[in-house]
Image (cartoon, rainbow, N blue to C red; front, side, top):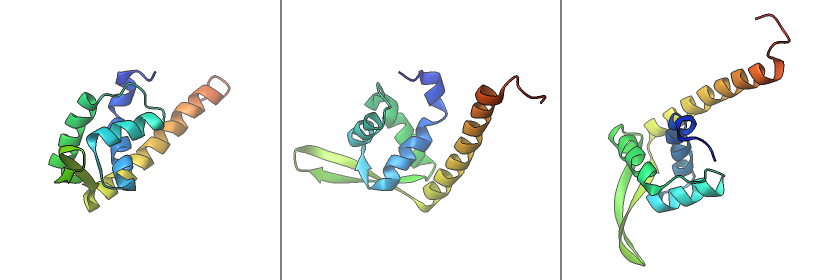
Length: 111
């Protein structure tokens, strides 16, 4: 299980990525994240992030009738969200490289 503090800074970018695949709703987002290995991420964690992403103009939402119950709020990525997703990926790759360098090379070279 990934500690919540480690997820805190990356989950918004991961949610944007899921939404970038196709228009989707909250429960489906949590299911997709779990399929990729993000276990124990509840809808209660996802919905506040969705609201923040929507408020910041990174995603848009539209209510649609569901075939099996009440209306669902479907999310899609906006052009600003696509830009943010690219920035997130760049930052993630930079962080990943730094951590890998530390754990693979650490102590073997002068910094």
